[in-house]
Length: 310
Image 1 (tube, helix red, strand yellow):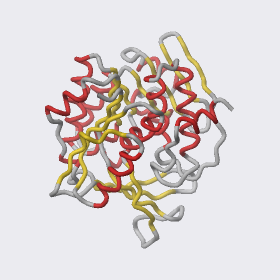
Image 2 (cartoon, helix red, strand yellow):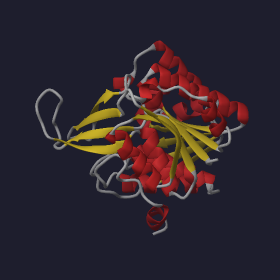
Image 3 (spheres, one colour):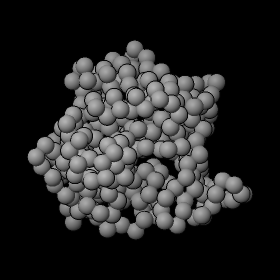
């Protein structure tokens, strides 16, 4: 059984070639790139040398084969990724603005993973792990996928599997009050919460980062607030530890937060103290933004160590 398991979407990403392109006019797009926030997380965790498995579904198509090949090659256990012969693998299109912000257009709800449900064999697989990682975008992808993630978290809590949660809010995907309720329930059940400054404000309603982190620590044991090129802060009850970022020339920010999560959780699984695990996360994020493509920036442990311990 893997030490880390994640439930969520596997998809391909098609990326705008130039900044300030929109979906309202013809333009050049490149890809397909292996993607999906949980898939990027799993790939990065496996590259850290930790056993990591994924519970998901892809279509019986080249997009699915592209992802499965990449994940297998990097050491992710995909034995619980099923193949749907009737629906396509999920697709995301992304455009970029000069200020670094992005716009996504998804084919999720009616894709293979959009109609995914947790099976009994998946449940048995999950409860043998040390960590279950859930991404907020997974909850927003489709009602069925949100329900599968909620069931996974319920089982994890019952069987002593630690739950890590990255809210990773995608406004383009919010679709129902039921989804919001599942999101809030998992937020309260998570042992570790990895979020960004703006997301923290959204999910807590607090304009002050310290107050927002304190609110989440009422139920979580650890909150990590990521802030791009600025310090990442590790919050624990009665403790606030800033961790400096590493300099990086940004090429593509997509996937950097997922790589942070993968390296951080993997480092914890390897026995590193939380502060050092955050440094691994920062190192992975810095390396990720320097590569074009959402999963292309996932780094091997030795590469992250070379940056962290330079």
